Image (cartoon, rainbow, N blue to C red; front, side, top):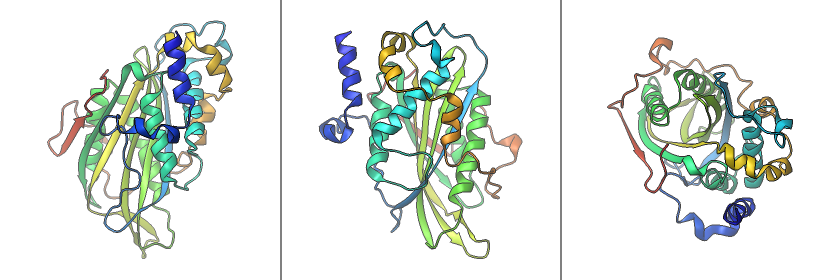
Length: 294
């Protein structure tokens, strides 16, 4: 118990005060948010949230956490606390490299799910008229961490909303944006917590008045954890201290969630979007060394 309290205290502390710890993170868990693509530094972000519940039974919340109503709202409260510690605001497009880096550190070190934490990354070569390699990559990731097909489908739909938001025009001829999807999925008796992100370069199509992806190799990162329900029950007082942020509020706070799905020619036909549960040949996913796979 004292060790668990120490882990929570470290998680609460500003990651900026623990820079020496960042070098110990596995590759992929800490993606350099300040990387450039060509001559373009990251200029903005587009964040989307997904919630999925397949109705499978979970352990009772217990009297101490009953106020949350369900385990998804416990998870969303913790996820929102993570955003607040990092200084990462999913409701706006403004980008800050420091908060983005802190968020990734906090996700990988959260004591509420890091007993079953894994970080996967891989390269996907996309073209303006072909996003399928990126979808194949996400499908391969989802299979590895035992995410069901319905959740995968919702994530793809959400990514289309993220793309739609990022396509909105400003004055730059070319830009790089952070695409970030956060997912809380109650499936197969577990509460899965996910973060999928990539830096995507786009250029302005002045005739259409919107941005479109350029030919590029995307580094896609998926961080995944499973909520430790017993840990949450033992440390209910900390969770209550985070306030109460329902799963509905969490889902609605993402800036991209009110966007329509993007209809670029790069998306494959709907029936072909969810790949078979096998590793595609046109992607090169890799699991980060030193992580614990579920």
